[in-house]
Amino acid sequence: VSCIAASRTLPFVEALVAADLGVPVGAYANGGSPEDGIVWTQSEDPPAEAVARYVAHARRWRAAGATLIGTCCG
Image (cartoon, rainbow, N blue to C red; front, side, top):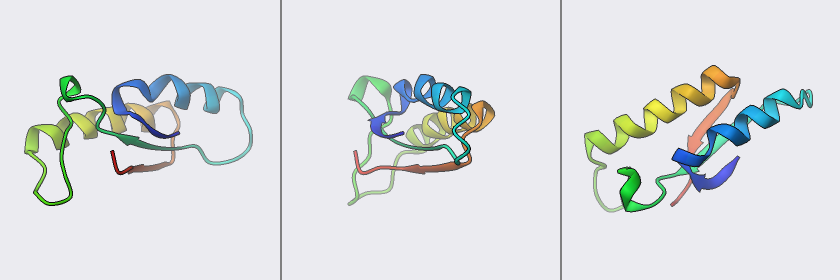
């Protein structure tokens, strides 16, 4: 699951895991809209609050069965 807002990624991870495709499931979400509170740019250090919000989402993806977790450019 890639290039979708972190706040919208979990249902896709859950669906892929439930489909039992026999392949690893990964989530590489972006920060989403400014309202999601996960916004950073490549030219600055991300605010700790934004990182914490992304990590909270990533932990839910892992609990749902994702084994490959990262971030995309958005």
